[in-house]
Length: 178
Image (cartoon, rainbow, N blue to C red; front, side, top):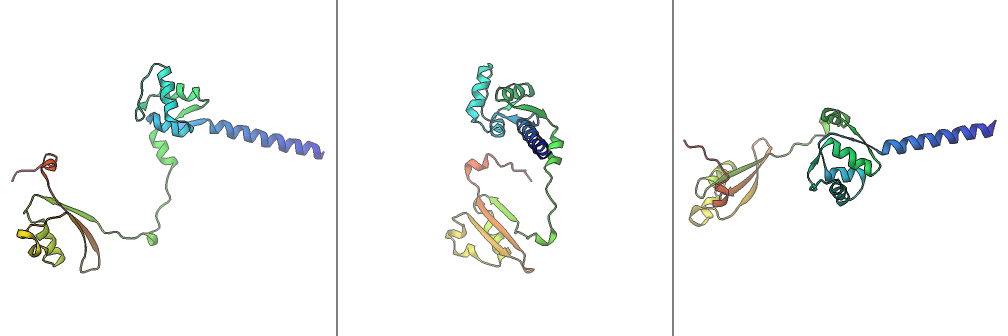
């Protein structure tokens, strides 16, 4: 009687271990998986994924997304099965717990002030900080990039980052005419 019970428990444990091993060999992915992400999921080097794709006649890069058929074939080469899920399913599967309002900490917003030389960036900051930095600068023009934390009257803080726009950056900034 005891021997039968031990055998049943051992068999049940063995079946559970086999089922868990099979589940570990199932990749639950969306169709939008890169070669690098697939390698991480299967715990292999990305070069092995790329080499497998090359043996199939496909040249892929590390950040290239693989289609469903390729994902299935490559995973099968490594002994994995692929189960495709919708992106919405993935999001709901990884829900985070709600933040506790009592534990939240307020952080100062960061305001970036960009402009060309002598356009009033430092003067604006001087007005907000109730300071006069421009008076100490050569020709009234600030010679550096700076970040400043300003404490408001109600004890809140704002961080300002002042940046002088240079020629290369001008090409990237769209200026709307008046």
